[in-house]
Length: 124
Image (tube, rainbow, N blue to C red):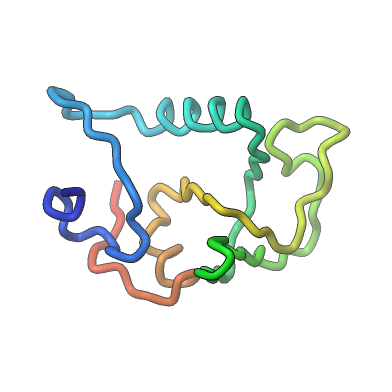
């Protein structure tokens, strides 16, 4: 049903959607924040400023492995809560669920990290 409504979505990556009857616009910032709040309540760790250079799917383990793009320096100020107890960002992550909040860079992310060219271009 999702792909019938949005045929340009990557069929391998799209795993679900939220349909709000009668709604035309969803505030993407507020939606992302609400997802993050609920994820934290369920024990998720949220990393921000984690620019991905590559990712792979392991069907046997049902996990994603994401490799962080090398940067000159990694600081604690890059963490999601800016807490002094927050660890420095790792160079790679394994996760069962990954939420890409890349926004205008979604097409670039798809090409660089997933190795496939998006059939669309993200524009403001």
